[in-house]
Image 1 (cartoon, rainbow, N blue to C red):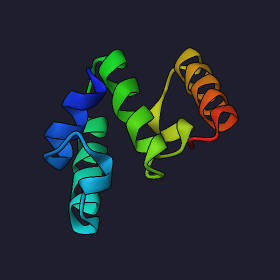
Image 2 (cartoon, rainbow, N blue to C red; image 1 turned 120 degrees about the horizontal axis):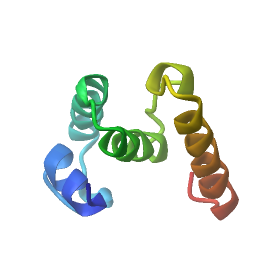
Image 3 (cartoon, rainbow, N blue to C red; image 1 turned 30 degrees about the vertical axis):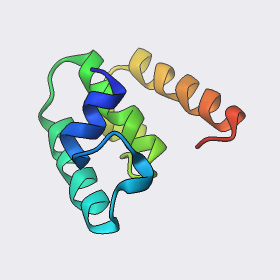
Image 4 (cartoon, rainbow, N blue to C red; image 1 turned 135 degrees about the vertical axis):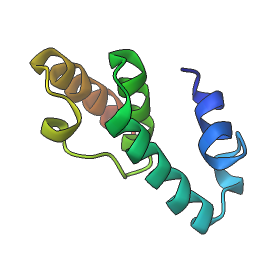
Length: 86
């Protein structure tokens, strides 16, 4: 799942700065629903990652049942936090 594709699908634009607050709220809610329904671990991780960067990700224990997926998510969180973008 491509980052630009996710932005277009959930927010109607690839430009994060152009997203209106109402559209951001609606799009993140749709993403959280899709995350709960998604069965493919790679797509789940992609959804969760974007939600994390937007400050709307559910807790790791809720999002990932598998310990290795939680570890990967923690590593992603650490990487984003170190880069100063999270």
